[in-house]
Amino acid sequence: MVPEQPVKSHLIGTIPFHVESLGSAVDEVIRRVTVAQPTAVHFANAYTIALADSDLEYAALFNRPTALNFTDGVPVAWVGRRAYGLSAQDWPRVYGPDVMQAVFDRGHGIRHFLLGGSPQTLEALRAAVSSRWPEAEVVGAESPPFRPLTSEEQQEQDERILNSGADLVWVGLGTPKQDFEAARLAESVGIVALAVGAAFDFLAGTKPQAPPWVQRSGIEWAYRFASEPRRLARRYLWGNPRFLVAAARNPGLRESRG
Image (spheres, rainbow, N blue to C red):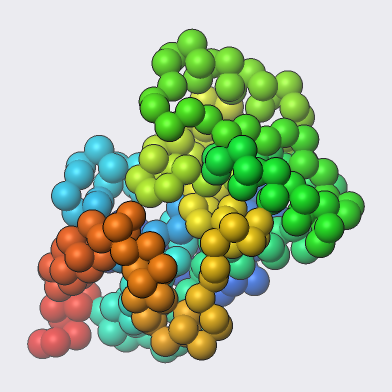
């Protein structure tokens, strides 16, 4: 068997980012699904870094052997390029909703399980997937209760995922809950689990997605904050400053200043 090539990674805050193009990231996800390699795929942005900087348990998720961490936010890519002397081509954004769509585009034969969202969002998402990707096989979909599951409920959920024959699980439970769940599923079920957050709402059409030019500009956070100020206040008013503090401590960034 040909040995696996290590994935390139660079540290920002406490998170080691696996720096890949979108196409290479999708290739890697599909490869891991194909060989049944248990993996928790995290799409980390400024808020993720801020949370990891303030919570050791959360930070540890991204350093597990099963973790694969992609750059979900443009500001994170900006910091990474500056810190490590890389170009925009060398350190691109790998956005969770883009990866989800690309896997549906290219992952023929993959069996998908959807975990998260409200029942209404899941229904709309399944309809959208059926319309856009009629050959895609969605073998299960569940909207867990908002409260934490009991150990017995977790075990029953895991059994349903296993019994469905799913090859991967898309997890849309919001940050940080979805990262904990993706990591748990990778280890307990032995599956590829991707924490894709708002991708459920965007693909289902239940929430507006920022226009491409807003996404490229790095101010997508302002667009989302304006659309849901009450729900996202902590994420941006606390998270953005904390992200800057965490990023400023990065050894590579300090060296680039020197």
